[in-house]
Image (cartoon, rainbow, N blue to C red; front, top):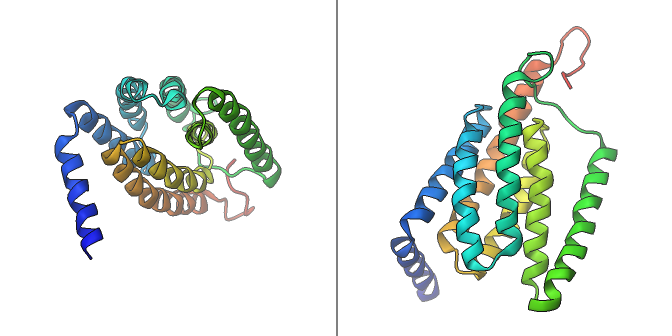
Length: 212
């Protein structure tokens, strides 16, 4: 009981001491996710602003891959905005699913990139952090692409990535951000079921074929 109270007290102190800039990034990131669940293109505007702030914060905190990842987020946010609004031939992009083969290729890419990138960074820093940092970064690259293309399974990847990110950010002192990612896991679950329902509604009852 005392350990739980101490943890709660530490969390409250961390929130109270959190810089205003990180608060802004947290709120914008949360806004991005909530709007993404609703398939609102304005989620990408929140993503750009949040990523720009986190770029600075993570660079200061020594999370190299997380800082670099924010540049990718900004680029993908621009792409996502255009893709969600115009889709193909001016038609808004629908929710779709990927085949098992495409997912296997994506997962293989993430694992290979994680090992290579983690080993490269770890040669100078050592420890497990470079590998976890690399995994979160490359898995996020993959999952963000799936979000931009409105692939349903992106939410399943985010559940795993966000859970790992909680441990990473907490260990590096980003306690409020770690707490945010706990909430991300919950919202990702909600996002999966919301998008799955939309995909079911979009299915053609005459042919049973979902839009892809």
